[in-house]
Length: 161
View 1: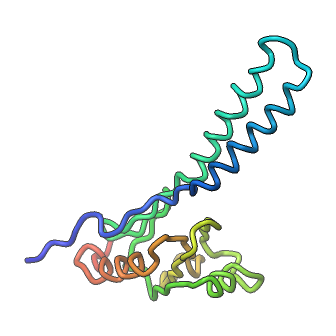
View 2: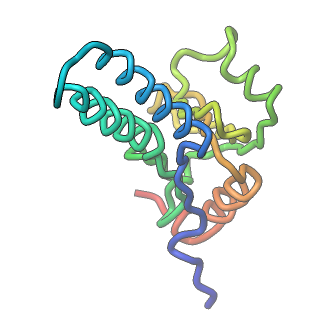
Protein backbone atom coordinates (compact mmCIF):
# COMPACT_ATOMS: atom_id res chain seq x y z
CA UNK A 1 0.00 0.00 0.00
CA UNK A 2 1.44 3.40 -1.01
CA UNK A 3 1.77 6.01 1.67
CA UNK A 4 1.21 9.68 1.02
CA UNK A 5 3.66 12.19 2.47
CA UNK A 6 2.67 13.88 5.71
CA UNK A 7 3.66 17.26 4.23
CA UNK A 8 2.40 17.22 0.66
CA UNK A 9 2.92 20.98 0.39
CA UNK A 10 4.37 23.58 2.75
CA UNK A 11 5.55 27.14 2.31
CA UNK A 12 5.92 30.32 4.32
CA UNK A 13 4.78 33.62 2.80
CA UNK A 14 7.89 35.56 3.79
CA UNK A 15 8.26 39.24 3.07
CA UNK A 16 10.65 39.77 0.12
CA UNK A 17 14.07 41.36 0.46
CA UNK A 18 12.95 44.64 -1.10
CA UNK A 19 10.21 45.05 1.50
CA UNK A 20 12.79 44.54 4.25
CA UNK A 21 14.97 47.16 2.59
CA UNK A 22 12.10 49.63 2.37
CA UNK A 23 10.86 48.93 5.89
CA UNK A 24 14.22 49.14 7.62
CA UNK A 25 15.28 52.09 5.46
CA UNK A 26 12.07 53.94 6.32
CA UNK A 27 12.58 53.21 10.02
CA UNK A 28 16.17 54.46 9.82
CA UNK A 29 15.00 57.62 8.06
CA UNK A 30 12.30 58.19 10.69
CA UNK A 31 14.86 57.65 13.46
CA UNK A 32 17.21 60.15 11.81
CA UNK A 33 14.40 62.69 11.67
CA UNK A 34 13.52 62.11 15.33
CA UNK A 35 17.02 62.51 16.68
CA UNK A 36 17.72 65.79 14.87
CA UNK A 37 18.69 68.27 17.53
CA UNK A 38 18.86 65.72 20.35
CA UNK A 39 22.06 66.02 22.37
CA UNK A 40 24.35 63.19 23.48
CA UNK A 41 23.18 59.59 23.96
CA UNK A 42 19.56 60.43 23.13
CA UNK A 43 20.71 60.43 19.51
CA UNK A 44 20.61 56.59 19.39
CA UNK A 45 17.29 56.01 21.20
CA UNK A 46 15.09 56.31 18.08
CA UNK A 47 17.33 53.81 16.25
CA UNK A 48 17.20 51.40 19.19
CA UNK A 49 13.40 51.57 19.21
CA UNK A 50 12.33 51.99 15.56
CA UNK A 51 14.67 49.54 13.80
CA UNK A 52 13.74 46.53 15.99
CA UNK A 53 10.05 47.46 15.75
CA UNK A 54 10.30 47.61 11.95
CA UNK A 55 12.11 44.25 11.90
CA UNK A 56 9.46 42.70 14.15
CA UNK A 57 6.68 44.07 11.95
CA UNK A 58 8.30 42.70 8.80
CA UNK A 59 8.78 39.30 10.42
CA UNK A 60 5.15 39.33 11.58
CA UNK A 61 3.71 39.99 8.11
CA UNK A 62 5.81 37.12 6.73
CA UNK A 63 4.81 34.57 9.39
CA UNK A 64 1.93 32.96 7.45
CA UNK A 65 2.43 29.28 6.64
CA UNK A 66 0.46 27.44 3.97
CA UNK A 67 0.48 23.65 4.10
CA UNK A 68 -1.43 20.56 3.00
CA UNK A 69 -1.08 17.69 5.45
CA UNK A 70 -3.05 15.02 7.26
CA UNK A 71 -6.17 15.53 5.16
CA UNK A 72 -6.35 19.30 5.69
CA UNK A 73 -5.38 22.57 4.06
CA UNK A 74 -3.69 24.76 6.66
CA UNK A 75 -3.34 28.53 6.28
CA UNK A 76 -1.72 29.97 9.39
CA UNK A 77 -3.91 28.59 12.20
CA UNK A 78 -7.02 28.06 10.04
CA UNK A 79 -7.53 24.58 8.64
CA UNK A 80 -9.94 23.10 6.15
CA UNK A 81 -10.55 19.36 5.85
CA UNK A 82 -10.08 18.59 2.16
CA UNK A 83 -13.20 16.44 2.10
CA UNK A 84 -15.14 19.75 1.99
CA UNK A 85 -13.28 20.96 -1.10
CA UNK A 86 -15.48 21.00 -4.20
CA UNK A 87 -13.02 22.59 -6.65
CA UNK A 88 -9.55 24.08 -6.68
CA UNK A 89 -8.43 26.66 -9.20
CA UNK A 90 -5.20 28.52 -9.84
CA UNK A 91 -5.63 32.29 -10.09
CA UNK A 92 -3.48 34.55 -12.23
CA UNK A 93 -3.27 38.29 -11.54
CA UNK A 94 -6.57 39.07 -13.28
CA UNK A 95 -8.33 36.16 -11.57
CA UNK A 96 -7.05 37.25 -8.19
CA UNK A 97 -8.28 40.81 -8.81
CA UNK A 98 -11.71 39.44 -9.70
CA UNK A 99 -11.80 37.13 -6.67
CA UNK A 100 -10.85 39.98 -4.34
CA UNK A 101 -12.68 42.79 -6.10
CA UNK A 102 -16.07 44.42 -5.51
CA UNK A 103 -18.01 41.31 -6.51
CA UNK A 104 -16.21 39.12 -3.97
CA UNK A 105 -18.31 37.36 -1.36
CA UNK A 106 -17.88 39.05 2.04
CA UNK A 107 -17.98 35.65 3.75
CA UNK A 108 -14.97 34.34 1.82
CA UNK A 109 -11.82 33.40 3.72
CA UNK A 110 -8.93 35.41 2.26
CA UNK A 111 -5.22 35.31 3.05
CA UNK A 112 -3.61 37.53 0.46
CA UNK A 113 -0.08 38.87 0.35
CA UNK A 114 0.44 41.48 -2.40
CA UNK A 115 4.09 40.50 -2.94
CA UNK A 116 3.12 36.89 -3.73
CA UNK A 117 2.03 36.79 -7.39
CA UNK A 118 0.03 33.56 -7.36
CA UNK A 119 -3.11 32.49 -5.56
CA UNK A 120 -5.44 29.53 -5.29
CA UNK A 121 -9.23 29.58 -5.19
CA UNK A 122 -10.70 26.74 -3.15
CA UNK A 123 -14.47 26.37 -3.53
CA UNK A 124 -16.14 24.67 -0.58
CA UNK A 125 -18.94 22.14 -0.40
CA UNK A 126 -19.96 22.21 3.27
CA UNK A 127 -23.63 22.99 3.95
CA UNK A 128 -22.83 23.76 7.61
CA UNK A 129 -20.21 26.39 6.74
CA UNK A 130 -21.30 29.80 5.38
CA UNK A 131 -17.85 30.35 3.84
CA UNK A 132 -18.24 29.86 0.07
CA UNK A 133 -14.55 29.78 -0.86
CA UNK A 134 -10.98 30.42 0.24
CA UNK A 135 -8.52 32.62 -1.64
CA UNK A 136 -4.95 31.89 -0.55
CA UNK A 137 -1.73 33.45 -1.80
CA UNK A 138 0.91 30.92 -2.85
CA UNK A 139 4.26 31.23 -4.58
CA UNK A 140 3.58 27.93 -6.36
CA UNK A 141 -0.21 27.87 -6.82
CA UNK A 142 -0.14 24.93 -9.25
CA UNK A 143 1.70 22.79 -6.69
CA UNK A 144 -0.69 23.83 -3.94
CA UNK A 145 -3.74 23.01 -6.08
CA UNK A 146 -2.27 19.60 -7.01
CA UNK A 147 -1.45 18.90 -3.34
CA UNK A 148 -5.02 19.71 -2.23
CA UNK A 149 -6.48 17.47 -4.93
CA UNK A 150 -4.00 14.67 -4.14
CA UNK A 151 -4.77 14.92 -0.44
CA UNK A 152 -8.51 14.82 -1.21
CA UNK A 153 -8.01 11.64 -3.25
CA UNK A 154 -5.95 10.01 -0.48
CA UNK A 155 -7.47 7.93 2.34
CA UNK A 156 -6.73 10.71 4.88
CA UNK A 157 -8.60 13.27 2.77
CA UNK A 158 -11.67 11.18 2.08
CA UNK A 159 -12.15 10.08 5.69
CA UNK A 160 -15.23 11.38 7.41
CA UNK A 161 -15.61 12.50 10.97
